[in-house]
Image (cartoon, rainbow, N blue to C red; front, side):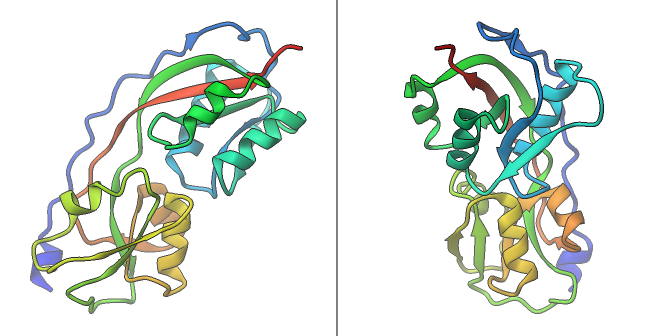
Amino acid sequence: MRWESEMSVAEPMLLAEPRLAVLSGSDVPVKAVGTLGPAGTSSEQAARHVWRTFAADGPPEIRLFDTYEKAAEALRSGEVSHVVVASAYSGVNDYYMDTRLALCGAFIQDTPLYGLARRRDRKALPDWPRIATHPAPTALIAQLLPERFTGYEAIKVTSTSAAAIAVGDGVVDLALTTQPAVAAHDLEFISRTRTIRMLWSVFVAARV
């Protein structure tokens, strides 16, 4: 289709390497950083930044969980030493209110490119597609959906990578997902793309 082959892709306007604002608890050794998975999420990229910032030795120990709630459980149990959470996550207040957790830092970092993606072998799409999306960036669908579509149905999933998997499995027509997830699952963007400027919070287990 001509409208797809000529579609322009927005160039990201990225921040310089973000600086982590360090608060109390910054002396906790970084052993493993937990966040939302599976592989390819914006959260994974943010977790890798935390690993680099604290200059932990060896290859990055990034643990990815199906939900931020499971990441919090891993932090409380000692499975991970740090957890990175996006400020757009609707349940981030639970992290702040949980007396077993402590905020130890925060930073601003642009996400990878977001866009609407389909399977490479799926050329025909319905006028009213089913689109898998994490709840937080749902508003981007209306911004990015090409004009040829008359509407859409948003199907909520646990992460942007889970959205990409849903497209690959044929459960939905499109996914609102990230560039790393598109590459990992052999998808292709059919819309323009954009980043999200995000505040990330870093938590450790509270001292008893």
